[in-house]
Image (spheres, rainbow, N blue to C red):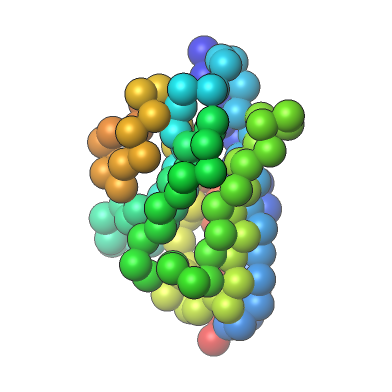
Amino acid sequence: QVQLVESGGGLVQAGDSLRLSCVASGRTFSRYSMGWFRQAPGREREFVATVSWSTTIAYYGDSVKGRFTISKDVTKNTMYLQMNSLKPEDTALYYCAADSYGRLSARHRTYDYWGQGTQVTVSS
């Protein structure tokens, strides 16, 4: 059973940085792609970034390009999201997700497994 556990969220001011972590367990993830999504109240789940577990290929949503960086440490089974120059509109519940087919998709329905989420709140 795949488990994904996010951490690192919090309350910050606009312009600050945060690093989210997602620890994955339960499988060998070499064929997987992993992603970050976010969802604000009353809004649809939004693609943030995705990364291949076995290569360096990564893609980003337009709203975070140039500010967020996705990475992973396969020795720790952990994925990260470094978020810089945070804006109030980045406020959301951030989810870690895993796709067992490694499709590097921006569509949330592609992903098989999800964490519980970690809240990020950016004040102006």
